Image 1: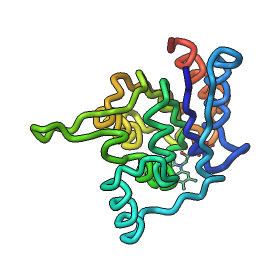
Image 2: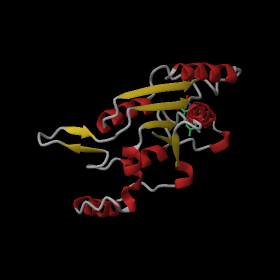
Image 3: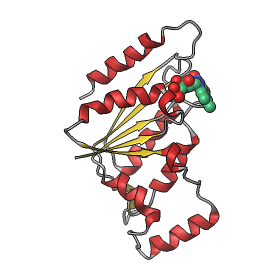
Length: 189
Ligand SMILES: Cc1cc2nc3c(=O)[nH]c(=O)nc-3n(C[C@H](O)[C@H](O)[C@H](O)COP(=O)(O)O)c2cc1C
């Protein structure tokens, strides 16, 4: 089984979200293969008109071995997906949206049926979204909601959510907030 960790924790070693993700991922040590996509290191570009045109040509030619499809193929083939993303501006860092532009390829991540229904082609049985927030978001995490939509589109049946909230609130016990998220992670199978 392959677990794909999409690391959108832009602050690297300083990131509390990354800390939670590493703790969650430790359950797979020596048990499953974990592949990591480090978005800060990857530095992907958003799709321009030229990039869209070039990729469309390759899609029409079914040139699926082209490197432009590598991230999509990797995502579609993973058995389990973990997204680590801090809460930025009501959702997540832009690098994660850019990554989804690279992943979201018709005929790899999803396709359209003859009766024009969008049907997912991704193999993953679940997607776990891990985040930390400066304030108390209380259910208004558009980043998580976006990934619920993406999971539906890509055919991933289960989406799970873990958040440590209020980490930037003055005087708050940050470790106590992190511990609540750790407890939620422990309860996940
Ligand atoms: C660019 C940026 C945007 C942010 N936007 C929000 C926000 O809209 N709401 C909020 O509660 N916290 C916001 N924060 C605070 C982060 O959610 C919080 O510090 C989080 O724990 C950062 O995660 P990290 O330690 O993994 O980098 C923002 C932080 C940054 C750097």
